[in-house]
Image (cartoon, rainbow, N blue to C red; front, side, top):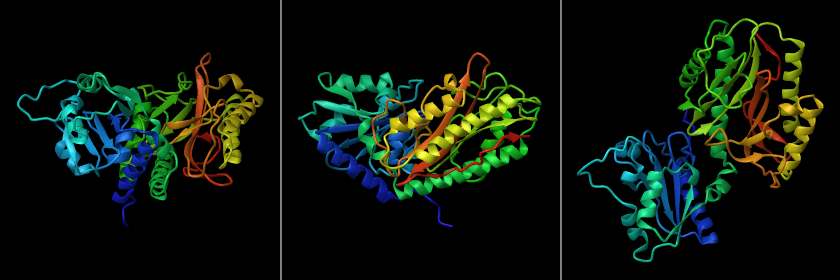
Length: 389
């Protein structure tokens, strides 16, 4: 079977759309920045995922983009990049700061002179501005002391929010891998395993199924600590009677998927069942009400009301959805102050987190969905039940 992937034509079209937005907004030069943990802006344009080093994509209103990398990754980048022109800059080197004496490298000054001659732009617009290392920022500032360096994540976020059919194919495949991985973990998890061993089960299976990597550092939280909204697996051993939540996700062709469900190693108590029911009430509030044309804040406020009515209003931390695509969590978030409008083919993690720090208990229920004209497509579509093992 032909491998599901984003074709070269789509990457070229993304650059054209970005350049059209740059012309519309008077943006002379644009730098997409990414690192190993958050490669999304670079990967969206170049399909390049930096390792050790960081990376950028430099784009002008006209002409071909340039992939910017550090001095060690040229052979890696040429093997993966959808952008043919690749330039090496010391500013993008790894954090141990090697000097690479005698190695000829490009500079921002030289690149900008190639692109603009002596008529330098007055602003450099950056996506991934908050990720940028001080080394890259300082290298820009060294050559362009009088030039403003401004945050411009929106230029790519606006393009990325509405997924194409090729992106959706990749996301559906990532969801299928995640779903099968979750099934496998439930079949093999047992008391006596550590949280890290459970993550190992998931990693091995998803790679066997064709994932390129996990969507995020996955976690399995059991007993005290299940109230942690973001975490990592520990060396804690699962014991009989434990209330545990599993948070697993596979990445395929850059696209992240995720499923979250609580699991009880024994019979669920009435209190546990009530918490799980509240989580599914939250999910179903989203599934039954989200649609093209709805104000995002309206959905968040309805969700908060229904969770409060279920008795868990003080367990809330954030709204019911965040964007999903090249990152498990990307813009936009659905929050009670969101005044923007949901659109068809936006994709989200329906991410229900309820946590209580006083008793150190919580849960996360998560599925990946696509907004449709009159509802949603549930890409992961994992069962809603009380999982008792």
